[in-house]
Length: 506
Ligand SMILES: Cc1cc2nc3c(=O)[nH]c(=O)nc-3n(C[C@H](O)[C@H](O)[C@H](O)COP(=O)(O)OP(=O)(O)OC[C@H]3O[C@@H](n4cnc5c(N)ncnc54)[C@H](O)[C@@H]3O)c2cc1C
Image: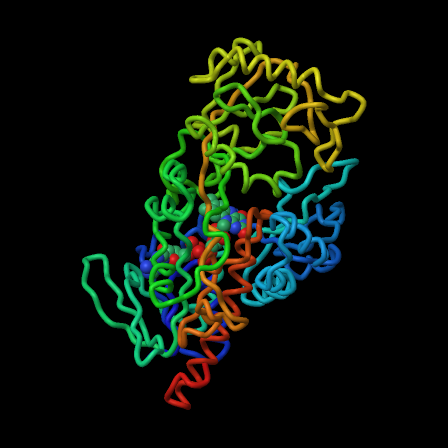
């Protein structure tokens, strides 16, 4: 019998597999998708990972090319655990830091070092997380590195490490239910693409099969009717299967089930993410440079402070804000002063936008937009811009637009340099925040905190890590921290079970 069976092949699952192998367990992974679509949301990511570090020196051992000539000209700054904790706290709706969040912060650097020791290579995110200032690359927002070749590179490096350690993977093999023997989870019932079912026995099972972002019915039930209109940005396979079986077995419902990571996306993006698009272009439907312009709903009104904070700290909440607007859409409006600062995703040949030489003409061209109301809002915005402060995207520059509702705290520049562009956006859901509760060793807990013997969980499935928002790059780190824990825990449990022949030590 296999020691540890892992459901899923994303980042959390692969971290669990590597850790379980390190713990001496035999490991089988099963994946609902075929081999080409395996790896879940992880393959769709930019591979960016947020972790605490004291200085640029801490980053050098992680870099694929520490001799890159840009490195000596780079200010990576520092991101101490206290700042990571504060960043999470700022999204906690006034609640204290949760145990899961303490764990994420305190183990983040160690988890990334551990990944590097297993062959994952990292590169500085110069294009998206730094600006050139006085000849130096200045990083902002505490997020500095991504895996080489983004999410695809992360997935491939982790999978190669797992396979090299003897882990087996079966694709087209979906977990449909759990096998419970005398109160101890002892394997899964799996179904292949042809609908054929089989029992796969194991001494411990790790659920790492994502949230319910791609299950429209579950989104509506757990989050509200408007979430039917949200478009999943990643894999179609994360349909809450793991959560349904765990909850069915008495697991506690834990964390912010009504909340999710959701970002502004091209209004005409395809349903789900698309792995056919080359890796470097996969984020092309995302539209997160709103902080350089103004965002209006179809009533012509602003509805968020576009410059409240660095976009790392706002982009995951603004998808929801757009979903709550009429028709679930909005317009991002820029003038030519900032065109060069817009990310590549605004320049792809299929990026949707309208362009005009005057703001009036622009508003008239925006489908469904109340042009008169929009013009009034834009004129009011232009009049409110504080001209005494110099625009500086490398820092919270305090260049506000005063007296507006909602306010505008930073990077406010007049829209006065033609041509003008308006990009239509909608809400893309990335992943859900609520899930199950786990112990320190990754065991799934019931409401009364008792253990569901033999059942572990990690990744998006773990609730309590993100409450009402998300500092960018934390999801993959969370998967690594909790995946590693769950893998170690499951290996230990399987070993005890082999020796004791029971689940007594759970
Ligand atoms: C477009 C996009 C960009 C992102 N960028 C970043 C980023 O740069 N940095 C960051 O930190 N986070 C990012 N995220 C978030 C990140 O993807 C997630 O936090 C993380 O990948 C989740 O890892 P996971 O292993 O829990 O889930 P996944 O990687 O989604 O893996 C879940 C796996 O379970 C499989 N599965 C589902 N149901 C079953 C079943 N019944 N049986 C068997 N297998 C099953 C799925 O097919 C999938 O392979 C991004 C997400 C998206 C969608």
